[in-house]
Amino acid sequence: MSRSSRIIFIFGGIKSGKSQFLLNIVCRMKKNVTYIATAERVDDEMKEKIELHRQSRPKEWQTIEETKNITSALDTIKNDVIIIECLTTYISNLMFNNKDVLKEVKELLDKTLKLEKCVFIVSNEVGHCLVPDNKLGRDFINIVGQVNQEVAKIANEVYFVKAGIADRLK
Image 1 (cartoon, one colour):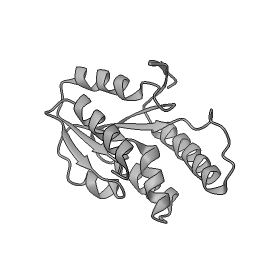
Image 2 (cartoon, helix red, strand yellow):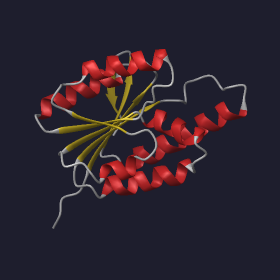
Image 3 (cartoon, one colour):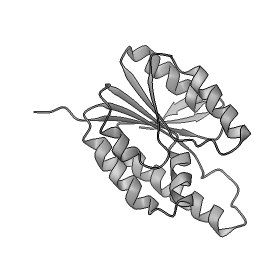
């Protein structure tokens, strides 16, 4: 009998402390970790943010930079712990490349459930934001909200982070 995946979902607002909370949990696990980074270096600000994230991670962690096909990247991972950060950025990447976001995320979640690993999924909370004045922005928050609900359903643990403090919801 095989063991099942353990999925831990961490979400919260931008700059809420999600990454630090994640680092604190994962570093205490003393396991081999693969970090899947979804951000693209589209401008100087994003390049700086990526570099700060990279510097904050332990050097021994394997990093895979995958912006559009996380599902395939999962096939190559041997480590016991996988971090996907950030699901919101991944969704944005898929939308800008005219992908079927809900289909792609469903495939990702289905694959995640079969991994028999501990998988951390990090996302932004969009339910507390202003409603954008344009259709693309509204479509984005609607999709992220829907995806966050789907991830929360399958997750073993769900944490909402605000002001650096995590509340366990599930």
